[in-house]
Image (tube, rainbow, N blue to C red; front, side, top):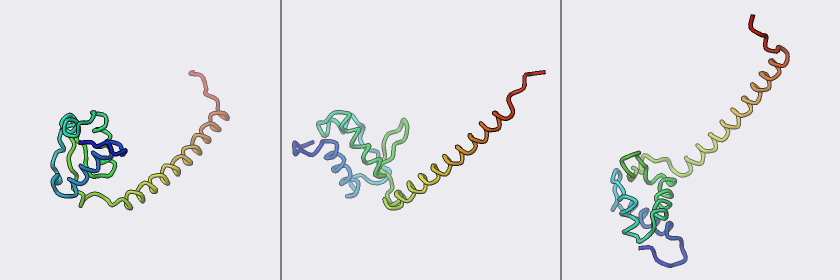
Length: 122
């Protein structure tokens, strides 16, 4: 049950589910109870429960499967938080590089079409 401690309910729920996962009460591969069941269990709204589960997803503790539910992820396969930060940095660098390359291609295309206006059909 969510307590009136000043700490948001979704964080309390996320903390409790995280403790159950790390403590082994929710083993890897185990489905989490439905959003409705968790809302009833914690006496919270559906949106509060969804926010809590979203936190666990962002942390890599659970994974959603469309139409099947949300399952506890095998954390031995999950990358460490430091690894994720490195991957994000690599992705940012790649996106920046692609943006520069795209800008050059667009500039060349604009220059090319300005020099050679489209010819009408013959």
